[in-house]
Amino acid sequence: MIDAQALGQLAGRLRSARAVAAMTGAGISAESGVPTFRGPDGLWRNYSAMDLATPQAFARDPRLVWQWYRWRQGIIGKAEPNPGHLALARLQSRISGFTLTTQNVDGLHQRAGSAHVIELHGNIWRARCAGGCGFVRDVAGEPLGEPDAVPVCRCGALLRPDVVWFGESLDAARIELAVRAARDCDVFLAVGTSALVHPAAGLPLLAGRAGALVVEINVDETPLTPQAGLVLRGKAAEVLPALELRL
Ligand code: APR
Figure 1 (tube, rainbow, N blue to C red):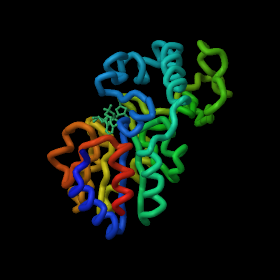
Figure 2 (figure 1 turned 135 degrees about the vertical axis):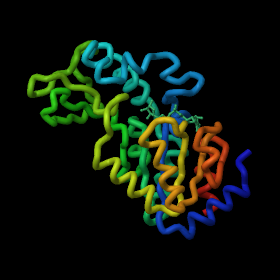
Figure 3 (figure 1 turned 90 degrees about the vertical axis):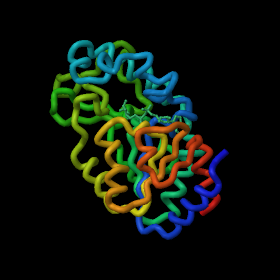
């Protein structure tokens, strides 16, 4: 049961907010059939992040890494934005000064109609040159050569998924936008994230220190829970539409 009083309180704060920052994690895409990372059936329970999501893993076995990303593309390609994604897109159009940052690489926010999504960890529908020539290619909807092939850049180097791997730094411009949104907001919504992976996990804390109301929307407790001013325990696809109705 969604906490009606907390929902009303949040709706009131959103109505008077000058700026709102939302940050999502894998939990918002769970109901679209996209596996989370650390949930009961999460990717990192079944696959080794060190064998699949590090630059060393790619150097060691680019074919295996691409097989795994193609498998994820297969799942994400069949997924549809759910009521949580759709509600956030509508909130963005109703609330001025609303920014949306995501850790997800699935592109479901954009498919739900959200604009200017700050993709902290990249996007699985893009490939970029692993050799550093800067070439980036949109691969949504087009097969990347033979299923087992490792795609090659026009400069001759390998292409790699345009996502951020463990041990890699985030794009400076994107993290700067996300930090600014967190620092300047009155309300920070942390939706469907385990709040374990930095620097993203630091954003709600930064917002809280800057005086914003930090709200956690999650089915479970996380390390962020004690720091949150409001907690809405429930599924994102249920809580966000319910919130919208209270606005
Ligand atoms: N609605 C709301 N929250 C949910 C739902 C749901 N339907 N289902 C699961 N959750 C919550 C879980 O309780 C958990 O706290 O979503 C969170 C998902 O956590 P993770 O799987 O750790 O995903 P995330 O926080 O996005 O991971 C961060 O880690 O592996 C890297 O780069 C990867 O972007 C990812 C980053």
